[in-house]
Amino acid sequence: MAAQFGSRLRKGAFTTAVAAAAVAVLSASQAPGVTVDDQGRQSAAGTAPTPDVQADDTDTATGNSRYYTDLPPLNSPNPAPTTGTVPPPATGATESGIPATVLDAYQKAAAELRASKPGCNLPWELLAAIGKVESGQARGGRVDASGTTIGKILGPALNGNGFALIKDTDHGAYDGDTTVDRAVGPMQFIPSTWAWAGRDGNGDGLKDPNNVYDAALAAGHYLCRNGWDLSTQQDMSRAILSYNNSQDYLSTVLTWLEYYRKGTHEIPDGTGTLPSHSSDTGTSGPNPGPTTPPAPHPSPGTPTPGGTTPPKPSKPGTPTTPGKPTTPGTPAPKPTPTDTVDHLERTNADKPTAMAGAAFTQRIGARAETKGGKAVAKVRVRFTIDGDTDTTFAGGEKFAAVLTDTSGVALAPALQAGEKTGDVTVHAAVAGRMVPAVAYTATVTERAADALARTSDTKQTCVAGGTFADQVEVKATYKGAAADQVAATATLIKSGDDPSENDKGPYFKDADGKAVRTLKDLHTDANGLLKLPKLYADDTTGTFLLRITTAGGATLTVELTVTAPDATGSPSPSPSGGSSSSPSPSSSPSASPSA
Image 1 (cartoon, rainbow, N blue to C red):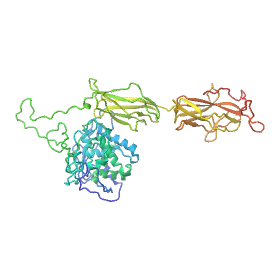
Image 2 (image 1 turned 45 degrees about the horizontal axis):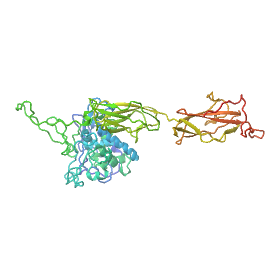
Image 3 (image 1 turned 90 degrees about the vertical axis):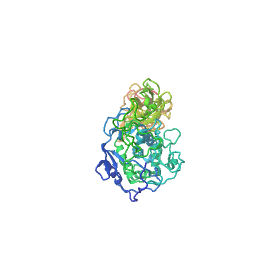
């Protein structure tokens, strides 16, 4: 939700004080306008620093509706735990954490924007900061397996009473109000903005503002419009202000952004802490809407997220009927499929392997099961690639969330091997439920070729002391296809039976012009081609061998002939009409080339 309609920007020159002001709010609990409650949480009290930033005077995503003003805990967030493990208990652990499905939605949206709008440089932490300020991370992660909120999250009626007057634009389709509009969903879009900004983030064919995947992707595209580059503070501030035209909103979002950039962790869905301070009243949260269920088991006298107080229990001594409650109890919610998952099982026994730069043919999967081993469908399984690796899932992401099918199986997108070789760890965990993750180890091997061939059959001949006219060029292939970026070595060897480096005959030159007879760290190009540097001949005549080998074991031996010049300086003719002379045993190895 966004700031009061009465809040207006001061037009002026941009200053880099924006970021400094946000950090100052986070670090100084005694700063004017900041209060700290008994849980160590901060909130802005209306007198927070108002950095002077110029923003475009355009419509906002939220209609300048209400938003949460709570600031992060004073303590730094805990380091992220290993996927599938419970984060260590600590003060503010749930408040600093982000519900699993909501976190997945933010990261998936940012990954999509990296591919479609790379110049925007959208950090997922910005989506998390806005999601925290707008809806308290979808009311603490109260979403189902598909990412849709359990009950609608609605902002106040934009009827001109303290907020903008925005008459109904959707006939109540999204907000249930046919008179005026309300901000809707975890990212609090007003219907008129959603009409053009809405996106399908979870691939179900719908654009639903109540779905955190759809809303996060829509927010990402909204923030990345106008050619803004969010790696610059000026464009970052303009984008945030376009979401809600308020300086206090800008400062609050930047504070959460800085906090999440320092680290956060995943918590189960539905366990997030709800904020308690709002921009319009200072103490009550956003109106959850009539269809949103109350928080489970509220303490007597404790305000509920909607701002109301449940009835207090009867006074001591009030007679009650034995065995019956004094008031009807709230029926226990029906367990979701996620609630019934006891464990995950691997679906693959083998260790997936692929060559660097290639796609893995074997897909990694996990099966969700109850304690009795029964398959559980419609459960979101989150796959994460861990460690220092450039291997990703198809599309360039290091995480993916997939719903289990009717057999309880979720298959991750195909792995795409990067250039770093070695083992890669992939974890599969149930989003929103802390059950042990299952781990896979995939292996990336170096690029390889299984065959080498010359691109020309021209004989390699040279006069002693001269230069070979043609450079040797070869093509590497793997299973018939061009093998690109394959490492190769070229060595002038003594003989077919002795692959050690020769100390006489043809040679290459290094950067200093010195003779070298072994070239390492060669690589084929994108077409699998490798052209060697020029070859030179010393004064030794005869037949010599050049052996080229690649990663993967492909080998090719090329015969080189060095002849003595005749009296005129030309090569002496050979009986076959060639330009080579018979080598003497003392001057040249005798070996047959091997392909």
